[in-house]
Length: 89
Image 1 (cartoon, helix red, strand yellow):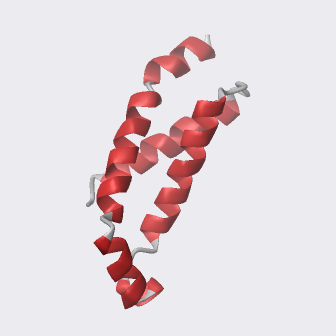
Image 2 (spheres, rainbow, N blue to C red):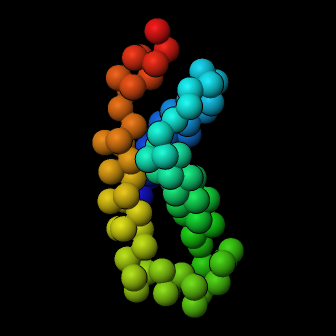
C-alpha cells in the first residue's frame, strides 16, 4: 500500500508543473489529473476510525484499492516525463 505515495507525489508534482508552465493541457490530462486527485483524497481517508466500518467494508468488497492502483498505473503511463521536457523548451 505504501507504493501509492510516491505515485501520488509524482502525479501531484506533474500537475503542479503543468500549471506552472501555463500549458493548456488536453482534456485527457485534465480528466486524469482530476480523478487522480480525487482518488488520492479518498485514499487518504481510508480508515475505519475516520470514515466508519461499514463504508470501509463496502470499499473493500468492491476492491476499491485494487481498482485505484490500476487507474494510477494508467495515469503513470499517460503522464510521461518526456511531455514536460518537450513543453518546457
